[in-house]
Image 1 (cartoon, rainbow, N blue to C red):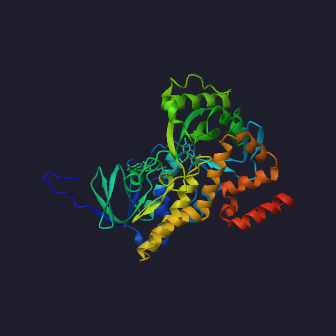
Image 2: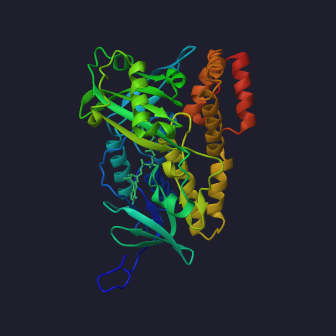
Image 3: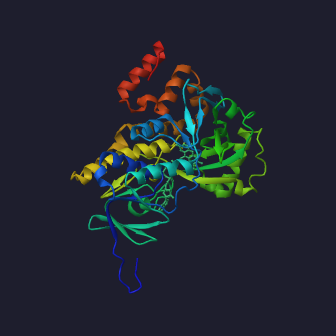
Length: 417
Ligand SMILES: Cc1cc2nc3c(=O)[nH]c(=O)nc-3n(C[C@H](O)[C@H](O)[C@H](O)COP(=O)(O)OP(=O)(O)OC[C@H]3O[C@@H](n4cnc5c(N)ncnc54)[C@H](O)[C@@H]3O)c2cc1C
């Protein structure tokens, strides 16, 4: 930034700079603080907003995220609705997703993110709020971040600034073809009659695939300011540009109405204040996640293409980014490249690649055939749910071990966990 006398502002220096204090940025900080407590005061996060801040999100924490919180020693001390029953509606029939234990805990993101920020601050993270990242330039190998509150310089920069990441755009380029769209509505309900509350149930409805949406509708019970609500929404992994934004939103709202005809969803096109739309960047194998001293995490890096679930990815990226940054600060010059390699070839990369394959097929031209195959075996469905949810870390098993457990569980019964 140019000062009044024409000179450049001297940058504020730190060891690790994190752009974005959402789950990905905060998880990176929390894992880093756990590994290297002596870094307290040398790690800075920048956020354009201030916690607690609204975030368009259904707030479903799958067991993988809950395991990450356990690993970090963080108790979930915000209001949450536990989901123990689930169903997926498809064109070829309904699938029961219940597993006898918690499938998901539904929180509000303003409260959840503020809780993470509090924990990270307590452990020594400085969060500079109301500070918007504008650009990143690499000077002599060191990333210099231009913000509306002056420049910052660090030995390593984590781009965790969400789907519209400035860091990604400045350092990695930004293909728009891997960005999905989700739209959501919060609606007050009577908890004594709403099935989602009575049965602690979430609903996924994939029947919109035949209506031209590469995704699904959902309904989650949640609590806002102490009052029971349903969080409803629709995700489209591949919004078609030829429809235009208004056309795409009209189609999404119409499919949402079809999925939940019992709810008062008429006229939403005119009631734009009642719903929120937001992009979700999903993982692509061809992308890179580290360049020089800059790495990406969370939505900025790309998350689950099938369901648009991203909080568990944010924690997983944060964990590996923290390990890489820690090794880098100890002198391992290749550590950040290894992070890129891990995001492609490690368990998270494998999982996201499989979810990409699933999205291409369940949302592709042969979707009916794939939903039919998925409906055949109850056992295989249970295993799929455990794997997706990361229950007992089964998603981290090496492919051969997972296949063996899967084959044994399908053929002879028993648990894959
Ligand atoms: C409608 C909807 C429903 C969803 N439901 C779920 C769900 O139920 N479960 C689930 O796991 N995932 C869900 N997701 C996905 C989930 O919200 C994201 O994957 C998750 O928020 C990613 O975390 P993040 O930290 O990478 O990014 P974000 O949560 O977007 O955080 C990025 C942070 O960076 C800040 N920031 C952005 N730009 C700048 C800038 N230029 N300068 C400084 N700061 C900046 C923002 O203020 C924000 O605090 C949903 C998404 C949508 C859109």
